[in-house]
Length: 461
Image 1 (cartoon, rainbow, N blue to C red):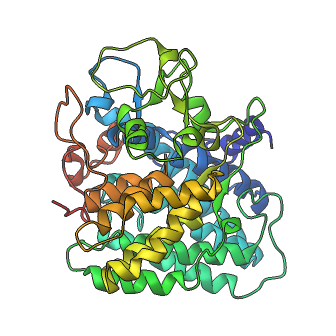
Image 2: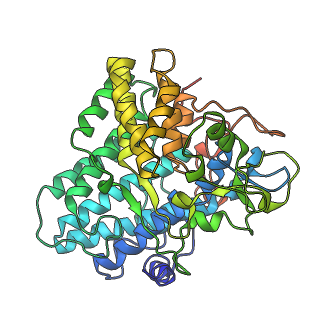
């Protein structure tokens, strides 16, 4: 895979003639005639690079105190952001990802290839969920219609969530049609294995059901039931992870490897590093690279005076090496979803073996010795009614290192416990601001939102 070539293709497919950042000038009703394979590959790269590892998630990881820049305040790390901070994220979500997925779906409809249709719907659900989780209300039902609709209204987040579930249901139906022609090497995620795409669709359904455990008009018990039912058909092995693999050669490095670079000054946060150290977590040496100058595991405290860059730790090779994979959704996460849903329905004792299996699975991924896993779990103790949710989410957060899902979990549960950084300009932010490009080209009432305002489903105290 040559990343530069792929991104060039993406630009030629999706950006030619585009004059605004919301895709209202590329008319999906008159798309360039490009085969499905030439659309799928670059959009999969874009989802991994620009959504999972893009600007919004980089900022969120600072807010979650997983990462920190070796820079003084102020900055987005101590909660100073502006509308134009988020321009690239909106562009990437709508122009680069959702528009190209719309083109993929239209092309697959024209050829009758239900497998590419299914993939387009699964990835549209993922991309749309990314957008609504950071902005709340976003355009969809009137969006992606080219010059026929230049100023699409924003759908409510509740309606967006219904659309997401419908897209995933439609994808499952399409996979079940067993169309003979399959994607191949153009599918970087699953190499055309439609059984895995189907399992992914069910697992995403479970993930998004749990997002609404505290949403107005929804109950935790009902959402847990839905999540558990979906997981019966979901991801069940590590081999079914949704991940993007990078070769590590120039032009195809893992984007987090580039983020942890001397130009960005991005390092690991003291909060994250010290949490692993203080709990005797055997994953410390696997997830954290020792500072090159000292050989010590040292994180940067946001708000503290910047130090010498090479005295701070970076992300370890498993998540931030040049040839590391981006893990968009894993079997380990599916196990934690099941543990939380089981806790809601059946209590801590029932959730215990699922929780234990989830932690064990993640440690096995990292090559932790069995005796160290046993010692760690014994020290953590048994789940109880009082501690179960916190422990499940804290361990899930560690296993989902650098995943934007951690920001959603923190907002909806309050875990991991965080306090404002030194020099904070506000409370810890709970959303992104709407981008400047939207304010100027498509004014909507929702655009007055501040970073401390909550999205619809975020009702956690």
